[in-house]
Image (cartoon, rainbow, N blue to C red; front, side, top):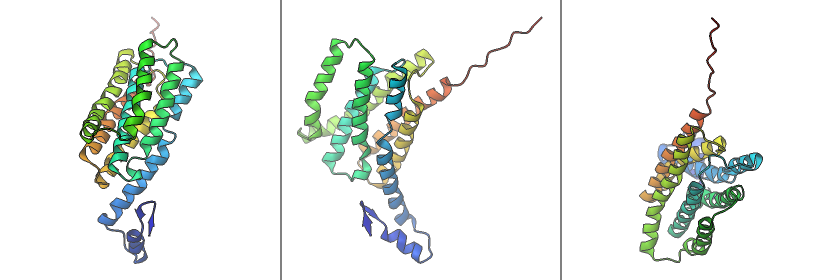
Amino acid sequence: MDYLGIDLSCALGSLRNGEFPEKDCLLPLVSKLLGYCIVAASTTVKLPQILKILKHRSVRGLSVVAFELEVVGYTIALSYCLHKGLPFSAYGELAFLLIQAIILVAVIYYFSQPIGTMTWIRALLYCAIAPTILGGQIDPVLFEALYASQHAIFFFARVPQIWENFKNKSTGELSFLTCLMNFGGSMVRVFTSIQEKAPTSVILGSVIGTLMNGTILSQIIMYLKPQVKKEKKVK
């Protein structure tokens, strides 16, 4: 029995015999299910961040460059997975994350008026180059090098935001829910990538994502702690 690339016959056969499925049968099934759960959750992962900006009409504490680099990283990662022919459950969330990331950057631009000339240039360059990358219309060797570079892109996409948080001792308008889902999704993706026998570079990207998203999440928790004011003693 195969449904959406998930082979249920092994697990169902064991359960019919009153036995618990063996590891070699259970782990691939769990990996597939978790993969599709990530894809489903990814459809709304950036929505809390977008809604928080719209509600407060502010991008206080947010690094524009960080979110722009995130769009570039998602574009490269998605195009690479499409080019490699990986199963949808192994990368499907990238499509939804890319769409939401583009909307999020547009919202940040709107509330960051006036927009500088360099910002417009970066946006136009992306619109001109992205279709070619997503279509895989580049040299295979260059494609591999580009994908290898996206790990650095995601790393440096998080560094400006981490530094901004540290400098301000505040996470501004960052959404806790979005960061939590990013962190959880990265952790699960490490497991599913290994089970799907994805290239080492794909697994490395998930590990880096877990570390960086975990750092930002810890900053939100740390800086959201209410400060206890010391009461002055009456002499």
